[in-house]
Image 1 (tube, rainbow, N blue to C red):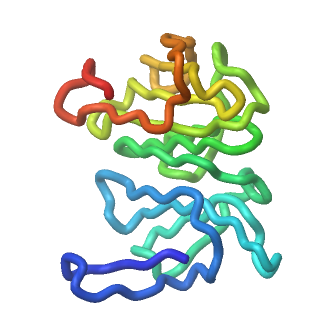
Image 2 (cartoon, rainbow, N blue to C red):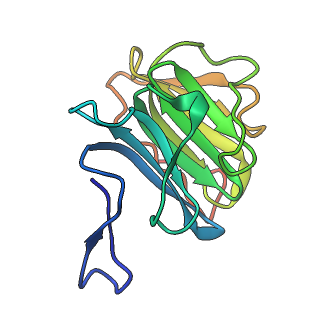
Length: 170
């Protein structure tokens, strides 16, 4: 499940999202009360998919469009969230109220393994597909269009953009 601390890690408390496999977790950079969690419930008591909390984890709602999808990656930028699922990449420009898929350049209906953003730059984002984990895709227009920018010899397991420098990515 998901746990929260408000005292720097001294004490932790479970949030009321239930016991499940957390497959992604992200916080809106401008609003610490807005939390996104990808959940897989092994018991079938709740639906798998993306859950949102707008009150710091006290209550949670399912993102209806992402219900019953397996969320594998979540990345946020101010007011924007990218969610990688087993059915492709979904993007919200309004903090999770509405969702869309990229207009072009990104394979549709592919499992997205990694999504990363510059936390202070709404225009740049990066992703990999599970089926081609050596290929890194990039968007410079807020996720509307994508291009495969690098093919590595080994699988990519993490992408880490620098918050201080938009051109610096590890």
